[in-house]
Length: 278
Image (cartoon, rainbow, N blue to C red; front, side, top):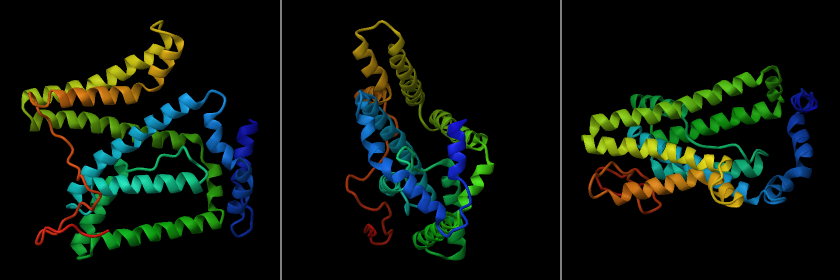
């Protein structure tokens, strides 16, 4: 109850310009350094490192998946390289200055749907997509700043966690449905061997991860080894099945993500073949 009361106090109208922003800075500044270093104190280092690796895959996976979708939907104007770069830059800046280092910044299903519509709108109106996208971002940022400086965030005190849980459920369903959609497309686009291999890799990665996580409650090996295996279960499973897919690539090949070996924009001029500048 005291925690809920404290959070409620953080979402109050101050009646002053930028009053909420100033109050947030005063409230969080004494704990800014501890938010970063406490995770590696008191025996938390191993769990923190495992969380970092897990979040790396949690961030890079949608960046790769949605990056390929963005590239197809925008005809190469936004691709895998741009998605990875923007995810990295925005994630670092957000964690450093927003006071919420645990928030994941990345592409989502709703953003992809909006991008498709926005790109089609730009084409129909004869507008360049990337400049229009930049102005759209600046316009959104302007409204975000105005909402922060006028304490409009205090309106969130009237919302319950039900809204957050529903949105989290939406994101989870989008990724789960996307995974099963990829499996269905594999049976439509690949031969039986390729589709079967894709299904084995997908389900095997999930099953192997769950099995490794169960080590924490088993009697296999020592307690320290069980904790390490359980903490790094996602990373271990992804690396193992990526290796399996690569080893048997000559026998049964499946589609692999095509990413440029150079850090350069995705779009190429169809007439000259030159890569556009940043």
